[in-house]
Length: 180
Image 1 (cartoon, rainbow, N blue to C red):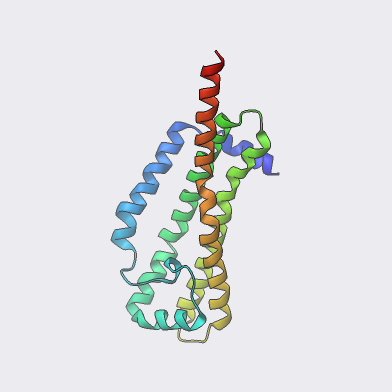
Image 2 (cartoon, rainbow, N blue to C red):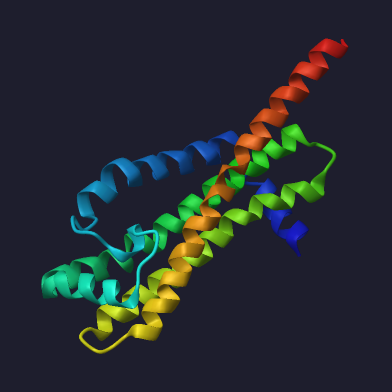
């Protein structure tokens, strides 16, 4: 199944698609997020938090802040993790294909970007539940949300696997030149 998913992504792992996704990623990071993301400390930007901290923050937002955060969670934070996961998946695949051309199994590592996306989506679902349920008690959901937040940040370095591919690609290019 992993190989089949990787094969599907191989069709997309080209310069044009990667540049389009990179443009969307940069647009989101430098225009959309600064323009629409809440200006207060949000749960999904913290590396970890307790249920008490979650409650304190959600309470501090006020009704308008909670609505603003909720709107961001169900719009931008639905699209952004997918674009990011797809971008890094394709970058990893693009570089690995060149660095390790005869090792299709290692290409499957490109799918690790979707683990970050999954953790982000599960975290977002918990945050939305807490925002909609406020002022009810949400200790268990806050603990689960924190687990997904910590997981998201712990897995995020996997997205940098494309650097391994770049290094491998460079080494392969140097070896090829020296052998001729």
